[in-house]
Length: 193
Image (cartoon, rainbow, N blue to C red; front, top):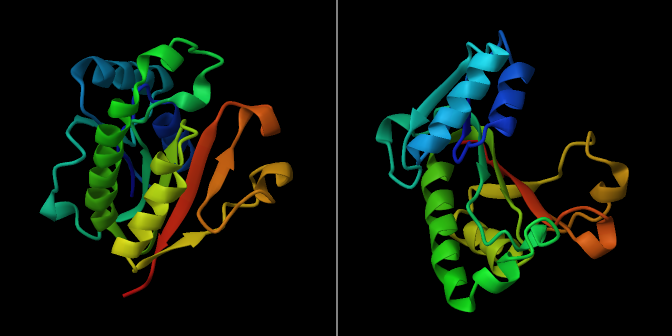
């Protein structure tokens, strides 16, 4: 059982559903109705019977979900400052005052969603931001507040050139260094009870 908590437009949720077809279920949550429709369209097009899509605020705690999921994917809402090459207007639209509310929302999502991961399961957190506040600092604070989690190495299926750049707080991809959009990812494993 896997949850993609901020799932639209659906690429990751659909990939996960295809990868575990016949052996598991993927839950895809999305806050906004128009984005839920994007997910539904992708699910129908790909005929993914094991993908369950729900319009839901992932920051709202659901007791019945506690310790029930093998994995949670949180590709969190962020400033998007890692994709300036594709969206140069972000440089002018994202103000310093915008960062703190986004960081608070990410923290709330992490604090809520980590409770759904069962012991031995994983929480994967990612952003398309370059800001430390959204990435390694967010991870450091999370680990301080949730000592039952620890950073786990990314799978060896990642390109070797990127794997060696992992730090104790995850992997930050930089456009100028890695030739890709800016991106951050960390895999957090929940210890066994």
